[in-house]
Amino acid sequence: MKPRRTEDTLQTTDISLRLVELITELDGATLAELADEAELAKSTVHNHLKTLAKYGYVSREGDTYHVGLKLYHLGNYARKRNEVYGVAKAIVPELADETQLEVDFTVEENGRVVSLYDESTYSDTPSYLVDGRLFHVHSTASGKAILAEYPEHRVRDILDRWGLSAQTDHTITSTEEFLDELERVRERGYATNFEEAIEGMWAVSMPVKTPLGEVCGSINVCGPTYVYDESRERTVVDAMTEKVDEFERHLTADSE
Image (tube, rainbow, N blue to C red; front, side):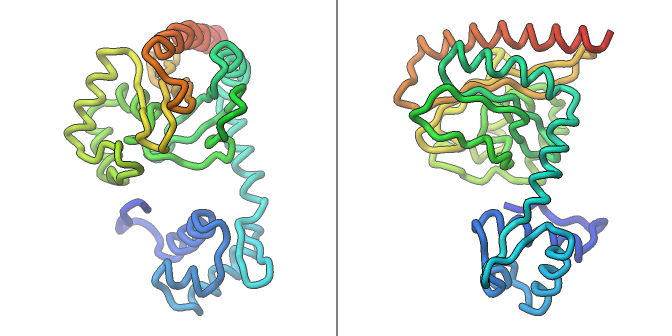
């Protein structure tokens, strides 16, 4: 789902960025496929692709367009310039080794969540995080953990912008139900996700706060549902609690 367009955005930029997103979603696409998906004239799409290719944001292989490696460079730069990246790089592998599951540190940006640093010691399940793709906040434990720290008006703004699309049959698709879920997260101290974003996957997440008390992201542990039980969730929560405390101590030390 794309964000709702507002009157203060440039249509030409909207089209170019949407084409990049479509190429990514389709894992490569022809001019005709992009024109059909974007509901635009082929000549319009061609002009945008030509410009994007000139600056390295897309590349062409035969008749198929793919995103360019320049986006990897820019994404990697954006990831590493985040002030908490260094702490996440130290904490995440330790928790992955302790839980023997996949662990990552996630941040919210523009109403979506993205993994800033990921480590997996669980070899029997594929990682869904290392490609840096964006996830919806309402269907992920990380999104719930972060949004539970936001005021309600900010949460509603994000949900209104992106909607609550059904990622699976288990996804919460009602705003009021999601707000109730955030209240449960606050009471419990952590968020959970059981096949709400990806079939066959469960996750637990806790927010991480800066010395000023502002949420800067979340630590998340995930794995396949066939290794889940309540005892394992409790063990993961206990280990995660210690790492969140350690993470926040590092942030406090870095700010002094």
